[in-house]
Length: 482
Image (cartoon, rainbow, N blue to C red; front, top):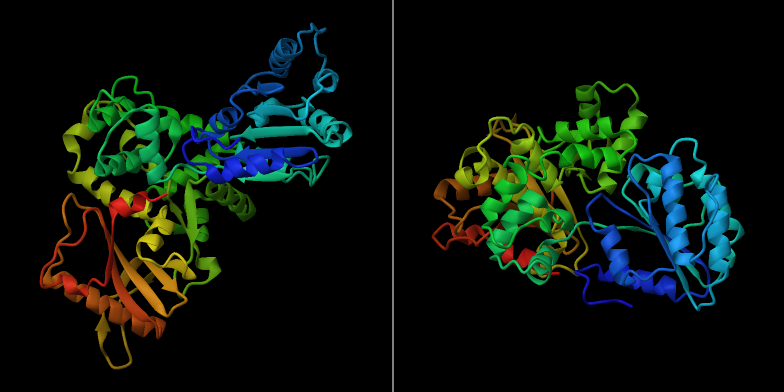
């Protein structure tokens, strides 16, 4: 049932198909951040043809949810029911209806399932009973559920220690589009023809979130689209950031504050630094918050060469959040054409450089492929060193490398990431800086591996007398491979 009409998601579709074809009952849970396309994927894969489907509603009471569930069941079964007293009653009637179906496969879909678990509703207990006492015994029954509330999905459903313990056949973390999938989506679904440079710019603002990309209007220039979405009066994404966290996390305030803090420290912060800045006393709760944010593609955790696990750094990598917090948090008095009027200038110029770094970090597989090292075992790190004086009295200025690719074939790629609207020109001073930094890195890390200078740029490195230091390079267009 894998379909070419769905952009990307080939692995997820293959997983779906394998569980549909299995000889036993299956419970598949799909989770990921809101707007990433979970519902679209499942509905498109099955062509919206289910034996029963229902979606939870945000911030809605148990009685309303039950009434809507009953209405949907009446539509599918063609039968009228008395008002459901509770979720046990609802699932009992659902079971009776499904028992009447004489089919090779019965496909059921529950969307936004966390929103059904309202306080004191006993939804999860009723669902567990439905699955354990009936559904799991039906070899032709395939139940797909999805939800954006990550903490609920991971702790109460996928990781449940009670009635659903070990019952989920497969959990699938749905991630945002990469650049290649974004290009395909804009072209094939939206009919928007942009250059790869423009697509890169759109990605740096919106990330690979299909819902946001779908809001682009093909009749408008990209810059005008960004202004319309973020800066115009009643801009549709003006309140998206707050709503996103409220619907994703039970403890939304602390998750949101963590992301807002990391937006002020672009290179990231250690767990202890975050604890201190947010004045959090319970370190365990922060650990859960950071884990949730990683699983929802808001942040990444990395360890620099020479650093311990306790010194691991958490860095904001969600492009939408970065742009929103930098430029759209307070729209009062803001130029409604701010992006158009300031692109490439001042704060937007500084943002562009960092946003491109994030894009590269999100496309490490494509970078390795472009360097023809996709099959080489490697790990990616950062590195930094403060100024110091060595045993010979030599003073070193210190240095920092944002991306190192440490390879098993005894090579380390020292990556320079540069965002420019033309070829990047290496000057004499910059060449000398690169050489000194490589020497510093080799001396302080004691590495015996060969060091290769790699430049990752939009349009490549300009050929001049200083460009010979570059041993390999990756252009932005190579990040678009799927």
